[in-house]
Image (cartoon, rainbow, N blue to C red):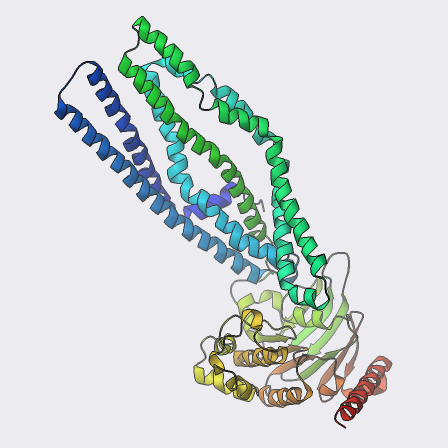
Length: 588
């Protein structure tokens, strides 16, 4: 399918509020006409003064009309700007809504291929940067073009000779501007790349400040940021330096029409072919011609910028979604999960899972174990539909999950990882995100069942405690316990725990395990764990090694049949005994 052009995308957003823009354009034209008419009243007054007219009432009436038209000019201009701003802010909201909605529908790998700093820059700063151009383009760019055309037509009517002479410098200005526009594309793209790099470096520096301080890398990280900032500034300076001559020509020649109009007008006046009043009016009109032309020229860079920004927005909006239908057409029979001959890689060059098949029965407890990097988390994320498989299929209730709507399948899965993200809201609202319809009592009840009620109530504001950005005001173990409560409140038939108790101490881990044992009745549980002692009672243990399901069975079966599992168990027991010994010595 042919992709839409940038102009088509811009029109799609603008057309959502075209009525606002249409009335904004109408009032912009009205403001131009209202702003132009006073010049004729001024010309009439000058002509009457030179003719010796001393009728005060005439001049007073003319002045009143001038004042009324100037008031109308600013009034119409204000209404036009108000309408265009209203439409623009709605467009910005629509753009951000589409971007965030798109990110939710993209494969996780596609989202992670760009840094969070890049997304933040596009969704916040870059989209916001279109406001000035979109909001002012209609009223000001329109008047900047339409106004000079009216003035130019009036000048031609008054005296075509002076008009043409006053425009002799315009071709020089146009040529200089064309040269700047033609040769600056590479420099402009360089500024975009360097600015994006600066933004990414700044986000990396801020997010990694804890690691930077712990490992004493302040100088290295700060120097990296300073280098990016200097490159970001230098590229703009170098771009401007390249076109100093052309910019000087534009600045000097654009307002120099008087160099020809004044001597020529004086000559025509002395020859009797030009009246004094028209001569003065031509000077006034020429001077009034400059300001809107300079305004139009200033918008040229903004037009290019808005094209670039929309290009960045479009690049996200046109990325392929997870292939999912909008409506549920085939209803799954039960909640059994199965992977059949699944192959998957995060990139085309490297495959992580190879012809992997497994079956997860409804209501069973399943554990994924294996060496680090074997593909356990990848399996969990594929089951949660964060990515699509490269080949093979994953079925839920006998239906390929690619045939199920994304929102439907998402409701079937509750997923908890070791790096749980909490929003900068209260603990109550973070738990309620598992089920937005849940009452306060239901939130408190699930917190009790998950064993985190007591520690929450010991906080200063209890359930109304604000957790900070990413949950930074809480410990890692506290964040995990709240995330588990949030997942349990979702009441999904399948619960995936990816090292969900990694940050908890043994006492709290035992409490969480006990709570989960009561809460998962009737649900399917998939656990990724390195502490093998926590999953010995699982209905099925799947040993993953080098992207393949090397062995499956219960704990005793794998001990007898799998040398790798047996060696992992012995290593775990040795570490556990060592920890117990060290703990005993520490407390001796």
